[in-house]
Length: 90
Image (cartoon, rainbow, N blue to C red; front, side, top):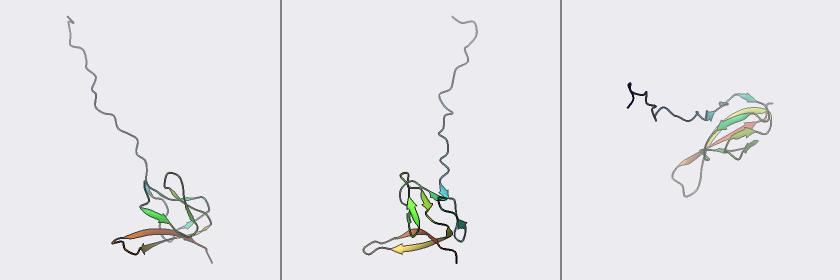
């Protein structure tokens, strides 16, 4: 038997690192080609003009321009989808 009680280790206290998801460039902001616009899981926001989707559903700009958000409704659907586009600066 031990003379003093041993300090027990807790099985709590572990947590995963945050993923830092969300919008990185807002409407009206000027962006350069390759800049990340939105980090997301799943296609909550879909890619529009001059925007591509990466393997992890991240949306990034293909050309220099200004960010624009719109909503697109699909036939036979009740809700609309958000679309992000990059428009040329003129």
